[in-house]
Image (tube, rainbow, N blue to C red; front, side):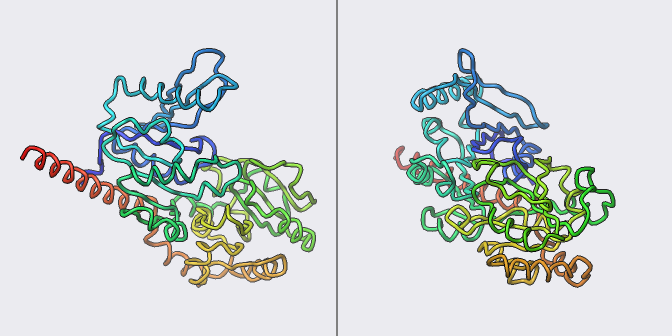
Length: 385
């Protein structure tokens, strides 16, 4: 089967390739096996002189594109320069042979005048609800909806919120690289910085930001000093000094994607301690199926896309506050040696994979491309007559 919808793909991302390995990396690395992918990050304001685009090959078929602009650049200068750098990028490439894939609607401000073969909006989060979100982001998203040929959402809740905004929109909840995370089930040696922590380990990995429920972790750690909390990930958009501190709370910093199964192997329960607010209302945490594939019982706050499908299928437990979170952890501690629970997890995850997501997306992209070509052909025939 021919996977390629077009030969080339330009991905506009608000997330940096080397930050946290998640949905964009899973999908773009697969597109790169079937064509050329250019992953365009937001600009870094560090250029000592003339703006430039740094292009670096990261994988076979995938290039990382990082714009460098002078420090102190105004927003108008940034937009004009980004458009100019994109014009230079397409001086030796044909934009009509590209798929434009957007993770951030804000990129439309400097890319709207180019004519790609296909426009995809992969709406993985409700970015307008995030801390420091651009004021114009909702307006720009509406503009992107009007340009997009097909839209994907990062979860069912987000799909329900966006489904009336576009006629060709489909939900794609977080998926899983099962083979990678299942390594945690057989790994016997923990990384050095975790192996020195004795006792029952409760773990979290991911970005520690405004969505992370600091008070919840603080309360549970205080009431259960025999439990050890292992927190992995970069701290962003919040003051690290506001994070809870206790002898049984361990911040191990960021780890790369390849290391995660080793850390998971030593946990008794994996946690999703997110606040319930506008910034988490529509999220579908990728870590949920990753934790489960690793064979780790899971306790989460009441995130809608965790409740359904994971909690309703009996795969995870939900805590509403410190009391119920502690009870849920105590319940899930029994599942670490429960073969019936693990069988249920494997049955549920059997048809879930990033490969399946990728193939389903490319089928929908192909259909959108054919529909677009048919519209263009009909318009040309009408004009000719």
